[in-house]
Figure 1 (cartoon, helix red, strand yellow):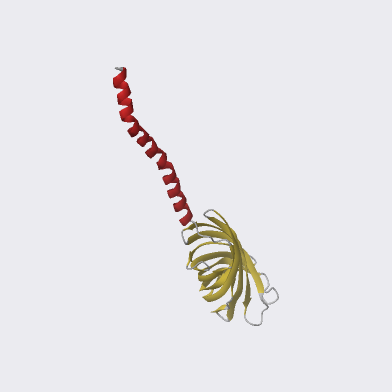
Figure 2 (tube, rainbow, N blue to C red):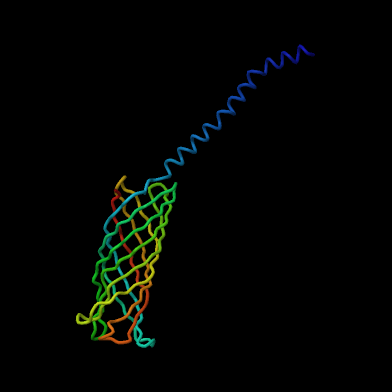
Amino acid sequence: MKTFISCLALTLAPFGGGFAYAGAAETPVTSVGSAVVSTVSVTDWSGFYAGVSYGFVQDSMASYQNGAFGGNLFVGGDSFGGFAGYNFQRANFVYGAELGYTAGPFATREGFHTLTTQDYLDLKLRLGYSMGKVLFYGFAGYSTATFYEDSVAPATTIDGLNYGVGVDYQITERIFAGVEYVARDLSGEFDQTDFPNWTFEGPSSSVNLRVGFSF
């Protein structure tokens, strides 16, 4: 019996060693495969960037005199602008700050008056997630714009919070393109010499196509 057991052990030993070797090889293959997937899924968005934008702005504000509703103000039109910012990145997460500018002017006629807005400045804090060459992001921040009624009334500043979402696509290592939606909650006063006790507030929104360059 001892001789039989010894012979059986000697016969199975090569197969047992082979099984043990194959099992040990699975872990490196799996880890290498995971590393490859992890590497190709992350695109570098870090650093300075700047670009230009084209889109459409729509303001829909309500006017008030001494707190009483006085009418709706609609201003909008095609927009041109630019932006610049800086991204930090940790794994797939991208975060940073951006300053955007939209020129105008956007004017509309209300009765005997012409309403105009221009020179939008949007400071945005952004948080995004990179998936391959695509960056999805959201943001919130602060906006200002210049507003005036008629050419004789001095311009005033309107301001408020902004928020929105966007997506960028990396065309080359340095060039990207994307689309962005910006919502603003703006408010301010008319010139108090020509229009005493008149204020206004309401939403402003923009949809922008963007092309940028990373430094």
